[in-house]
Length: 96
Image (cartoon, rainbow, N blue to C red; front, side):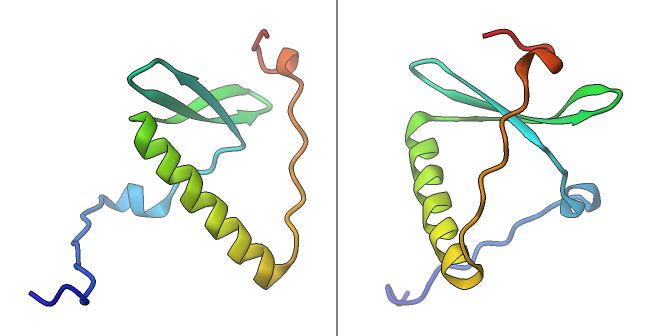
């Protein structure tokens, strides 16, 4: 195997997963061993859990790095991204 060739990985996905899911809020919790990211949808009817992702801290750090790289590439191509306003936590049932 040539070390210069990128390895191809086949990814299987169900039709519903290929469509994707929209989330307009995320919550992040952590313990020493794992980071839990809840993707939520705030709608007039309330807040729904769309997906929960559980990762090791090391993988989350790699994800954060990949996201930062992609944000930089996006902004270079399309211009600066304006950060979305934070929702009012009391409106969606969270306490701080």
